[in-house]
Image (tube, rainbow, N blue to C red; front, side):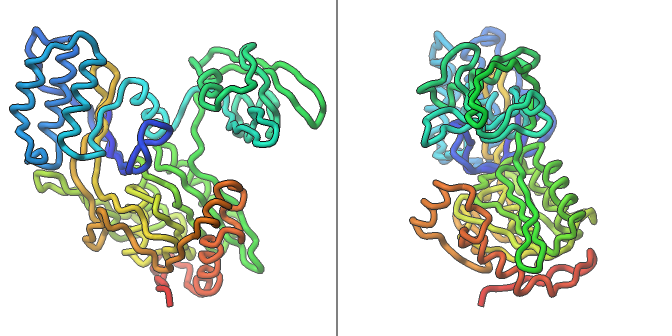
Length: 442
């Protein structure tokens, strides 16, 4: 779990987009204040080092600090002189390595900002486009203009090529570099030179940047034979994910679906509060998870009779479904609310908090662990699906090179989930007061 200046619990194995690899669980709490540092350390790199030491000293889940003498570590850190922030950053990272905990780690200001935008706020500044490098033309191409975004309003369409950004040609430009140029301060303009092959024309369009809500939920109604199935894919448990999930369920309910497939494959986690909120959309009653900290204190999370549907549900998971994904999966499994299909999940039941530090950098600290409603510890074990189906290397390559196949009959795990749903689940009663009968693989 992450916690920042507004502290967050984080369920995720690592950060995305170069900040972490995937899998962490975050939860929002009150702001954190460190004990005062001696006056001569204020506003210095040494003060930052001590700020980090004190947070770990207070909150780290392992009271032995991996058998490291933590008090002696502080003395050693403060006996050194740091002539720059970078030297302090290096000392902090080397010190945290001694804990041998890949989830307790230091983030420089850029990494901390990226994480806050991506997961905690669920928003970023920009114009609302998704871009890709077209493999045939090697041109930066618009994959999608988000609905109601500045780009959408300006008439940008999927398939448009970005030939230049503020006069800078994009030929040979990396996706990451293009994204940095397009993003910027809210309220400022960016000029894109667009090539539209269908109409054989090139034109410039000036678009004003704004705050963009990052899409974490995609959904569609699928007509599978005579049955209407709601397919929902959740990529990350960001702050905006619950709102997006609520809209998806409500829209699909209005279209009178008979059941749902919830795809959590590749979802490395995110905010604890988001996983709990989303679990409550599927569960009308029952426990969701229990978090235990080093002091022995625990927090119970339960459903609160606010489920949006009790229609049959199948959940898709794989080895990259971790942390917050496993909280949701464990809650739905232990409460007999869903059939779990796919590969064994990652197995991360540790909780991190994210702290924003005085210079804009950040620190994630493992502060506890969580257990499923039945008290199961899945850390380093994972959750075994009710219906286990692993993809071959060739199948994985096919889906990776052609993402449009994900969630179709050409996706073996989705096809199996659909078979489970159609062959069994539509016979279950759709009542908010009767739990869904969990099906086990034969």
